Image (cartoon, rainbow, N blue to C red):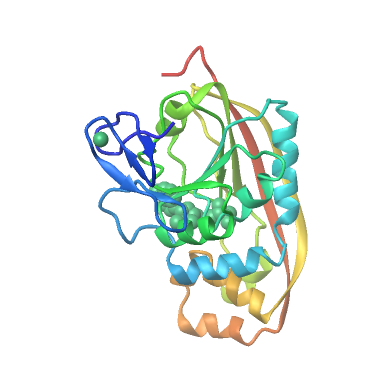
Amino acid sequence: MYICPNCKTTLKKINNTYKCLNNHSFDIAKEGYVNLLLNQPKAGDNKQMIKSRNQFLHKGYFDNLVIEVIKTIDDLTLDNPCILDVGCADGYYPGIISKTYPNIIGMDISKDAIKLAAKTYKKIDFFVASGKDIPIKNNSINIILNIFSPHFLDEFLRILKPNGYIIKITPNENHLLELKQVIYDDVYLTKEKLFEDSSLKLINSNDLNYKVTLDNEDILNLITMTPYFYKTNDADLLKLEKLNRLNTTLDFKIAIYKKNILLSK
Ligand SMILES: C[S@@+](CC[C@H](N)C(=O)[O-])C[C@H]1O[C@@H](n2cnc3c(N)ncnc32)[C@H](O)[C@@H]1O
Ligand SMILES: [Zn+2]
């Protein structure tokens, strides 16, 4: 299923190494993952962001979302689907989903994220790569999960089987509204666009929203795991450091797309 990031020929697993026909080789790290990313040692979320995400997710605040994702996969009624989570970070979602759907793989451009994922979920295959250049054969994946992570439509369409699916999770306008209200005087509500591509058909879109009450540690983890951390000045961050409790909205969009075999490239 893997291809060489250098020459795109099939990678074969020989002992603890993946090797291609042209003898490019990629060692499996002691944690069990393989790094198939060329020349980008410091890409993606850094160690601090990953640690905060890991601590936050393990409190279970996003578990209702994971349950919805599993129900969405159930509704597709596929037999043992091959699922790829693009931008899986610390592997929290694949870790839960694998209990129902064991044929799941996780990838992320952040080596720190994948190292932690592979250490935590030993039965799942994880690899480091960019979504821009996914080292996976054409037409080999049933479902791509893309949860709060960047998307790369051409690559997604290439690796999806005919009739494959993309399940894309994005934040809705009210996601973390109360958190933003603490930091910013004027809260800018962002609306994510749905994919518009003739090779994809939107087959369903559901919203999920609920409120959670966070303590100070959760609030700081939440801000650290998001890009707001780098966009927010010290004075505004201090407001969060002083906050002991926050009731905030989680607001997600779950969109399901099907690869349109007649029109796809
Ligand atoms: C906001 S986090 C979401 C992580 C996880 N899906 C979750 O919801 O907890 C975005 C993730 O995308 C990864 N990422 C960023 N650029 C990427 C790329 N080009 N290819 C693959 N992953 C990427 C980051 O390293 C990070 O782990
Ligand atoms: Zn090669």
